[in-house]
Length: 261
Image (cartoon, rainbow, N blue to C red):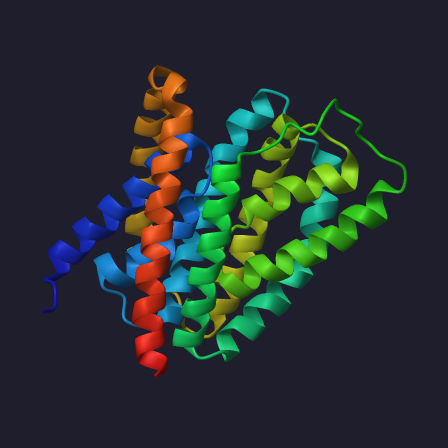
């Protein structure tokens, strides 16, 4: 059953709000739900269009959340620029490979990635000890790790924060709070690179992207309000959200493998 244009617009706004709300509430993981929401709720038919459109929305969300982290002094700009500059090449190459792969095969791989993200969320982020930034030979390490993280982010059409945060900690020695703030610059840059590559092939729905981004702004504002009140239940929220990711990943595998077969 096809949706009316008005219903599709409303669903895009609501799905964007859900992603923005979850990101602000639990601090990560929400962006990986953007692609399945666009596919199975909003009704985008082409997997590549869903990935390209979600990448644009993820980029806007990351840059919007970068400002408060920068004001709090949690962004290491030198490391952010080096990591992002190196990762742009990886993101462009990764997204070029992703576009060339059959959409249903790509979704099956995407679902497997979601299971990995859910595992990492259940495991929890580690503090990584005291701040040791900058480590010796920081620039080459940042460049090498940035290329790898950008490549994976571009291939799957995601921001890749769950890769970038530990990558920054490993390559530069910064503590986790600064790695989270610094990562947003790379998340936005990688996702924007991926979106640009997909847009060059006509694989971005600009109207849906705008609606998704608008909903994400409102959802992020509500999530930020709720984060303070629900701080004591953050672990339970993380558990519930990881469970949602697992269920969605299983559904994506079921649908994708059925199309492949």
